[in-house]
Image 1 (tube, rainbow over the protein chains, first blue to last red):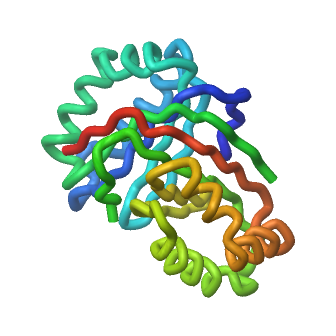
Image 2: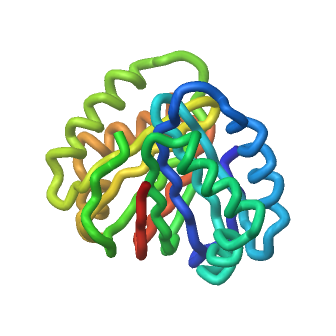
Length: 103
Length: 103
């Protein structure tokens, strides 16, 4: 649940979104993308929660790994369909995790 | 809801948590901390969602602003009570937002 990431530095993609009404195939694609992301080089973990606002954070070893995942053919289909059907508004933030600690 | 942050670079604090059972004063303190954070120098916005996992991301102008907020007297009380009562487990990640885009 809380991603067991390695010691920093590593990278995070923060995806914050507001959904449209209805499922319209979203749930199945979200599951597929979750599974596919895990198989990508440099994938370190994912954390996700949604109320009105949805937040999904995926963690990666490098910016190159993030770029490759963004360009994945099936993921490109998901991104396009997301803009057409599933999301009212979203924001993506690419971040370098510089420090972390836990309790 | 989706935080209207300025152009990068800026900083994000990703706080991912698993709560204990029951409220135990958590809701009131969470509201208070949300209000107090807004008044801190360098505060840029906040995004939050919770299912089983809770994710709160606060955005800041600089690492110095994050350090000052962490050291705020009332926030220190909240952090201590959080470890004693509210959280089973949490992880904090301090990040530099290098790039962002939205739809």
